[in-house]
Image (cartoon, rainbow, N blue to C red; front, side):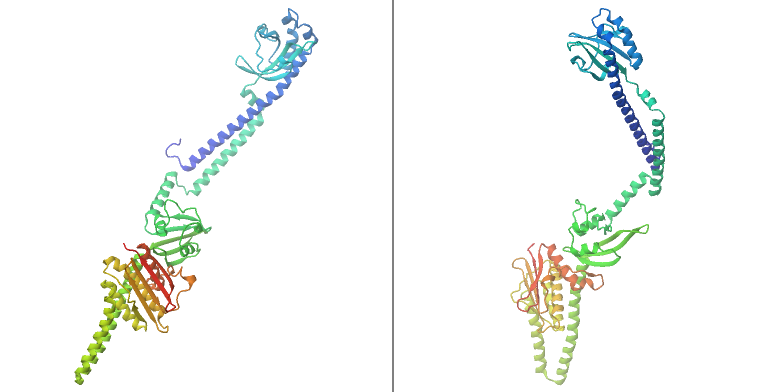
Length: 530
């Protein structure tokens, strides 16, 4: 339709001109149609009046039976045509085998068949309507000539041909031309202004350039690994790339673009963050399956606020590695504390040796060996996996330094695990123990009890003597978000979130109730057999 190389503004101008032309043609067609209707309405009644006048002429009634009716009534028929401006006038005989012209303004029609169309005149009623004669369209008026007995003796037909379209336009004259000219001028001016406005708002870009920009935007937006979510001031999602949909657990096929944030299934903490309207630095928000780091910036265009843009990235693996590093750090701290303790014990043994009290040295070494063996045996007899056993031994020593007694339930039992699965169990167990020790520290009879059982999957229970978790907070304790600080991923908020994430990824569950014996918190985790 368009030549190559035409600008967008030129194409819009041509399209608008085409629309204006179509509208003007439609107006002209409607005007001509209305003129036809007016012509038919006015001339139809007028033709009936002329026919009635001719039918009521005494000479017409007297000469209907004359053998020379065509010549006798010719002057009357011609006079009717001349006075009315009609195209033709006929007097027709209503015979059973057809309608024959008895008298006519056109002598060549005498004795020929007359076309009456759907006229009601043969039934004794006046009629006006369209009749086609030799391919030409006429408006006719038909009036019956009634005998004294009420029979139809003849039919007077007077008709006028429809004018051509150009004749109707010419009859409309200057007003129609003026109106069409004004409409065309306004259309041209409006089209030119619209084309200029389009060029201004598209910054001079052409259609291909705009399409390329849109394609590149979508390609870049959906290919970056970070999630991007744009929200307008009304809380409607305007942009959501594939990474964001994956991180938020939204079905990519059921696009969230164009929907309110409140109508999309999201974690409550994530929904509250997305509805925010001010800039925000990195914020860590744990969900059921991930630990997300979100950052929000307000967006504006030409000084007008148009919403917010939130970027997000998955920090689950980083948080898990930091949690595991924290567990290994606790083992290192235990070794460091034991090194200091061993140094003190060696000093004691050296002093006893210098005093020559060999029996006291033997008893002291035996007591140390028995205590160390009791701690190790209490764990290794029930926990066969070396990594989990080492964690429990280290946590027992660390808890003792803070004044908390860490005990392993005598009914505990755990066989060896593969290294990857053992790492996840260490993440869960280490975070639960750290949380329990922190909650119990300073309480009377500070005590933490750990139960690990692999009879039906992996069941972990950690109870403490702390203040417990309020019933209305138990649903949120595993999804508490904290600001992104270096120590945050090892903190209790992210630690418990990792417990839920790990258990969920293995098809399990995590919960918290009240410990029946201490009144503190009882955290339970169940991971089914793989």
